[in-house]
Length: 460
Image (cartoon, rainbow, N blue to C red):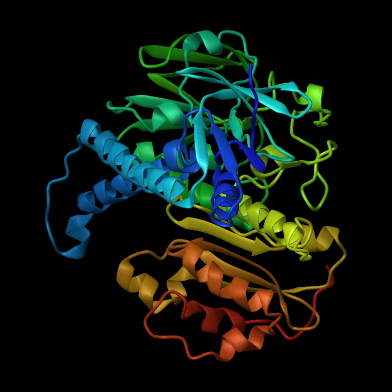
């Protein structure tokens, strides 16, 4: 079989991979991108975009049901097939935009499943047959898939993952969610707001493990207020039945949690099995994630790894910054994966957003800090919106610079970005305290938050 030679092979078309492929193709390089089917990457097809589209439908349904509280009446009805159709429409449009951008850049897209068959040769199985490609530079952007634990009966129950859940055309009567991580929380709340009963089964003693206790508790309280039930310290022994027809989840001790549908949200598995990484000498860790250095180089010469398969935080914006790292390396710059702060936002209601250190991390690192905290109820705009749940919190260092910021509240992601820019610039907290911020906005709360910074420094 002949081998097609390119300047660059991008194996996987997620955010980092497709950005790099288009960039290099526009620069005149001969680039091929191999993608098994998700044109534009998982974010557009089965993750960020469809999930936030579903969450928006749930939000509108909830607001319609609360219309009387705002002095206007309406009747709220639900058509899950229409919800699914809207999600499909949004995804389809974004896929089309991505395909158009690929074509305009000049890269060659091969749709199929690839694997290494020689040290620098990838064989791709396509609908039209086999192709083999090679290049002096190969970039692995393979992504992850939903992890389904090896629990007795779980696979046989044909559980939903986020992929299938986002395409449901019927509303579950009772959705049981395995896992209290951010995916489970977002989807659990969305389905609860659409009208399903929801029970979240979590191995640990609480949710939102990376957060400080006050943040995690506030998020838990908000979800319980919405009617979500939690089972904590739960070890699942076995699952019986079939998702969509009825399932029983049996826990250690004999407790049984029964529902109509079962959603597995217990983490992610890297897509590195069975693709011949051993043939090229690419090392992976015990979980299967590719080992890389701060320039995202793997253990094999001429091969880099990008995105979550390389252990990068599982956010699209973090993956895009991996592209920036590669671009910097190629141009002789100094941007590296070890020198960045990655923000994130959880799209529950209220939203949860964070950048930088929290109290636990600062204390563990022995960093002195002060804490400023402000209830959302203190912000005039939050009151006009009827969205007073949550709070803002900031950590201030000894030099008056902002070490970290967390917010649980309406528009948290947008407000966080303002604080992030101040942190990037190394500005003292007084800059935001004294800035003239438009009234009435949610961001105006930053004036109030930073005006409450205590004068006495606390030891971390």
